[in-house]
Length: 196
Image (cartoon, rainbow, N blue to C red):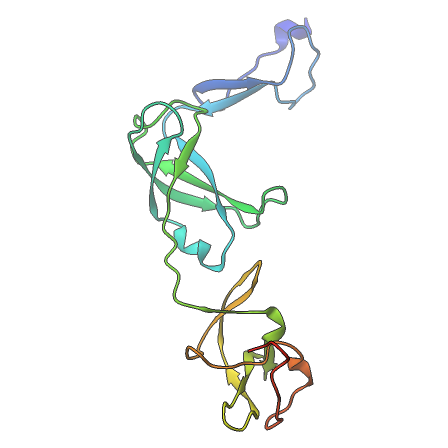
């Protein structure tokens, strides 16, 4: 009687992409039995490295193509960017809705995209060079003649695995890279042996 009273209804028309139950298995109410891909608009899911300007990709059009098979490119518009990077890969999941649902490979196909990341020129410094000047990022700049230091405000662009990238310093400017927390304006410093 329970079987005859049970009816499984899909929330929308689509294609079954996976099953979570075996024939004859007893399932409870609200338990997932089948995974369904909705008909209509299709999406591509890909991963990007995490960087501060990633939010600018929201609403942007990107070109994709299948990893294997037909090399024809198809367009997708980025509609969702995950708020956090995945712990396993350190990348951010991005979803793009295909502009033409009929274009592109079939469901479950691996796709790849090349995206340009326009980044402004920056100077890379070790993170130990960064100090705070009334809550704003700064570095200790060294006067080439007197070797006295003074605070120089910088714009912090991004963190990398090598240090920090900043803007606001002229090329060739000498800054204190180690021991910056021990300095005060006008203090005279010397370069460490072998340092620059």
